Amino acid sequence: MTLLMIDLDNTLIDRDAGFRAGLTALLAAHGHAADHADWIMPIDDRGYTPRPVVAQAIRERLDFDLTADELVDALYRGSRDNARLDPATADAIGRARGAGHRVVIVTNGPVEGQFGKIRNAGLDRLVDAWTISGAVGADKPDPAPFRAAAAAVDGSLEDAWMIGDRDDADILGAHRLGVPSVWLHLGRDWTAADYRPTHTADSIVEAIDHAANAPRLS
Image 1 (cartoon, rainbow, N blue to C red):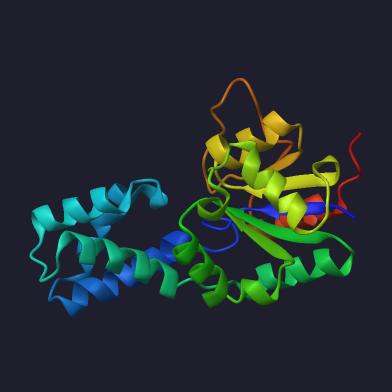
Image 2: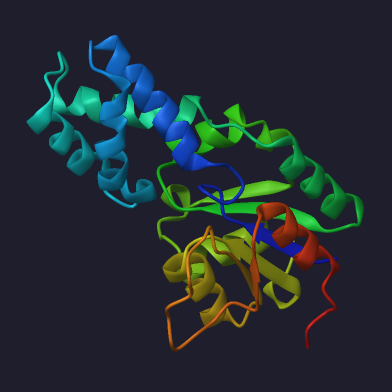
């Protein structure tokens, strides 16, 4: 049995697509054109920018009948409520679990928002467990979320893989623990010089299939 630890945002689900869908609906609800999303998305930076910073940038350019806190909540809600899972990804998870592997989501973020995405995407019915940094008290690349993932299924990091899109969280965290990894490149080039993923994948399906079928590393 191999423990497959998999990131959530822009790995298992297309977080950016969900955020944009929620953002477009929010703009329309307040009388703003959908094409404003084109300048907001780079500010959002794939979710790396704190929500209050994104909300402030929006409020500086557009009139919203919302307080700053209400706009932050609306941004979180839009991303959460529009989380969707590609059927091909669900099939890949099913293949891995059918082969006897344990699949655990390991994600950074607040518990309510991240679990909402997991639930709305239907992942709560497809994986063995999930670990959310807000519950653990530490974000990847800290070892705590990875260790919590192994403990959630009575597994071991000695027989684990990490799959994710973030070099500075998913791959770095795995590297520090000596865990092999698959980096979902999403059209980017690898830039870190002092560590590298074990494998680079074009898609989450390829990533899951690779980790599930890779020979055991000693």
